[in-house]
Amino acid sequence: MSDPRWEARADLVVVGTGVAGLTAALTAGSLGLRVLVVTKGGPGDGNTRHAQGGVAVVLPAAHEPGDTVQRHARDTHAAGAGLCEADAVERIVTYGPDVVERLRRTGARFDTGEDGVLARTREGGHSTFRILRAGGDATGAEVERALLAAARDRRVAMLTGHTALDVLRTPEKEVAGLAVLDETAVPGLISAPAVLVATGGLGQLYRATSNAEGATGDGLALALRAGAGLSDLEFVQFHPTVLFTGPGARGRRPLVTEAVRGEGGVLVDVRGERVMTGVHPLADLAPRDVVSAAITRRMAATEADHVLLDATHLGPEAFRRRFPTVHAMCAAEGIDAAREPIPVAPAAHFACGGVLATVEGRTEVRGLYAAGEVARTGLHGANRLASNSLLEGLVVGERVARAVADDLRDRAPAAPDAACWPDRPVTAAVVERDVVQREMSRHVGIGRSADGLAEAAATLTAGSRPRPLDSARAVEDAALTMTASALLAAGAERRETRGCHVRTDFPDTDDIAWCRSTTVRLDEATGQPAVHRPVPLRGAA
Image (tube, rainbow, N blue to C red):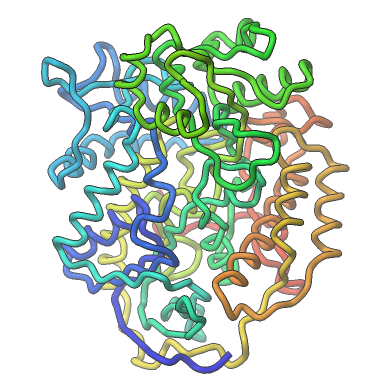
């Protein structure tokens, strides 16, 4: 690869334009930092816009009677199946109300009732109605709209159509900048002492997902190559109710928000029998891993490729008013969701693990930060509580910006030429995307075994070829390959069933041996992801 055709400088480079990245960029700008936001697509091409449910938060003047921050924390721990970090949970749910109020002052408009009080809904795993919503079922779109509008108003510098290639570091292993490629593979270099990875998830590892097309694990691969660890990666949450559009459908599928069940919708199989009866005390509002596994078992028992979500009790007008997004996307597939049950099936939805980071976004690499779905802060544990993701993005996005400002004050400025273009082309092992998605869907979905994990790993190894990262597609395929290998290593290591990691050969939960996180890093000898013991993070409480 040739040397960079252009160079730029910033105090902080934010990679990604989701809720965490935009919140961080706005906060950092308000603190006087020079910020540059980099995204491989357009400003709103991430997952944030697809978040239908809402923001889980206990606001002081607008919460359900009897609800408390402590109760929200308990629900979070229950969903996380023993792997949530108490400090992270407490800090994020406690800090959440202030952040949501600032988001509202930024311009985000949440739904209210006829009395003007903020409307609340309930989703799986929540013991009460505490989820704020916008546009009925378009909360992510409204949050994204408000943040993008604020970014335009405050003239946040944004570089669209540029793919992050590699985090550049000094000989002392501190971050010095970011190498990028534009849409025509023209290389560029951004000198910066701080890089925030806020690239979202890894849903495109699978054939069926609720994630945007760009959710290819780019930030996970960036962080691994930079020397950071990934933790809890084996816990991939499958959303129970993604619109089933036929057995041949691939890529992103429309999400049917969990709030449909929060408003009384029930799951039935193709014979009309309830799916969740007797499975869990919360029935259709059980945590997502429980519901997804139950649906998968029922599909196998009935030899069907989907089940049905029946919310016809709401009536046509009420359904259309409460769930306009769901109604419209079903109508596009010829389904009248207000009058007939909706065909649904589980699909890859959310990465509970990610880059090992503190609530302030600090990682093991000085100058590298992570926030949002790409990060593992300790909030989600083995299974994310519904609607905690937007909350985490808002809270950690703010806190990481303040951490960067603090860290830069304490850090000696780097030399002007500290960010050096790699002296040789950046190459990585790449497996064809169709092969990765086939193997991950077949062996690393809901229900895994040692034999299946080993078969997938062997197939990826056999199909791997070195390839220069000289295009956006090559960067994505390399990220998918590396992320798949890391997930396979973590999944093979955890020999138990916990949260959304289901081992059919180890069906029981083993708190004695496995009530701990699994961390993956690049092995120096092989250059491949391997399980390692975690090291203390800078600034961890």
